[in-house]
Length: 188
Image (cartoon, rainbow, N blue to C red; front, top):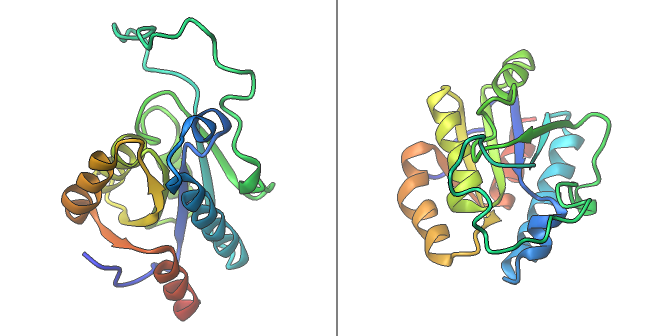
């Protein structure tokens, strides 16, 4: 479904744009995702709307497949640090997740409700994992979900396409970064 409105208190939630994940992506679409996501952060901040930046630091405890990645090399010390392009500000809200969804055991729902947020705009990596899981949770929690499809990517193009074409229309509205910004400008 195409974007129909921006709620008075909409928040941007950016998933996993962190040094370890972004640097591991060889797909050229990641450069475009970073550009679009940073454009969204700039515009949300400019309009006084909440910006939530999410990183991931681990896996759910007890997962039996943990450690099977084939690499015995530990991640770099700055692996979970948000990329510099996001230009983290003191007004931003930082959430660290240990599972796919940014809502699971993080306090994100409480934060958003305390801010009066009714709508979230999602961007980030990876479309078929962190972004989709967060979108599903947001929908379950009753948020008006908007997915900025040109501000997200997945290392698996088929997973990205499946999420955008088949899953996201069931969870919320889809739009480009330009459409989201245009709608914010028209309603603020």
